[in-house]
Image (cartoon, rainbow, N blue to C red; front, side, top):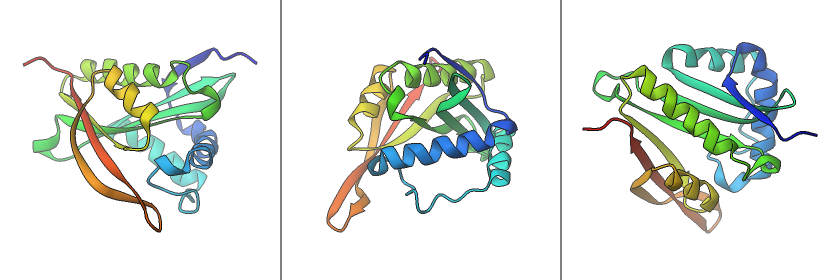
Length: 173
């Protein structure tokens, strides 16, 4: 099997594969996602609606290997006027395809798109403090820590992690 991947915008026809990808990621890395696999119960129709919502409110990219979705990046613009210069993204890559440049390619795709849109000045994200691999990727791409919500995420009865807020300005002042 080839590990050659492509990055493209998601379409409604990707709904079922995106659902499968998301469930796989939740199963593989349950301690770095806000939603648990038990809470994730979107239908194909709901997923189609979510995919289409990105057409006006952001960007949805997928990474494919052999026509199978193995990575995804969802970026949402703020609908509020005073916050409309920025948005927040979430990213996921299946474990088997980690450390192959796919996450970097997805984020670089977002940055290129955001620069072309021109209204976007700042891109943000939240990451759990136990997700070292993701934090290193974000730092490598120029994202900086802006704040930290201490013990914000409860993983178990006495197990907490911080939620780190990171961002990158993509316009020069």
